[in-house]
Amino acid sequence: MKAKLLLATTLALPLLGAAPAGPNWVGTVAQGPNGAYVMGNPKAKVRLVEYISYTCGHCAHFTEEAKLPLKRDYVAKGLVAVEFRNAVRDQFDMTAALAARCGGAAKFFGNSEALMAAQEQWLGRAQGFIDANGPRLQKMAPSEGFKAIARGVGIDAIMRARGVTAAQLDACLINRPNQDRIVALTNEAWQQSKINGTPAFKVNGTLLGGAGSWAVVEPAIKAALGVG
Image 1: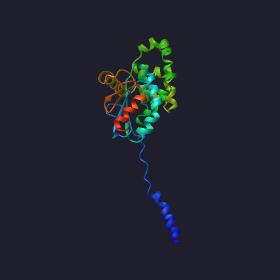
Image 2: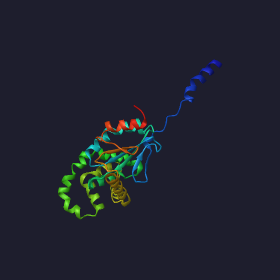
Image 3: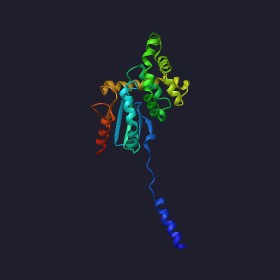
Image 4: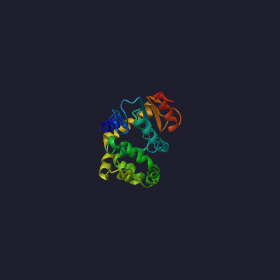
């Protein structure tokens, strides 16, 4: 009986002594003082700033190619925090930027990825919408224009699929504080940081050169982390 008890206790020891899994930092998202959303460990060794335009095809491509390895290999482990800064180029971009903020921090990155994934569809309707509604759009107040664009190109359908009602989306599109935050981020991108285009990136405050691709960004992250 004693032998059996000893064996059972010995077998239990590895389970009792197993180290708990570390936190997955992907779920940690907060809004910074500048109005940008940040995903990841606030004390991460590396801060990756992404300057993104929702009407930029290269931005959509980067989002698609980088989202899995960036989250899995760097953000989840607490090594990198990602800060998303708007660099708005036009009123369609502004409409998408406002829509992405529906639901606040918890929904922001998922909303952004959904809008980027469907970019070809909704942006493909933009020129036809302008051709048919240009004069009417020019007479609208900006907030009313954002609502018309969202319905006209299908951004509203993308957000409904994300659980956002029409009324909630309208409220997001006319949210003046968010409009002001996005404008301020845009001005910082183009006028202060003087990015040459989107996507653009900073790693720990240093603006990266070269094409905006994961093949450029990941080596810069590794260098900042001190790994090969």
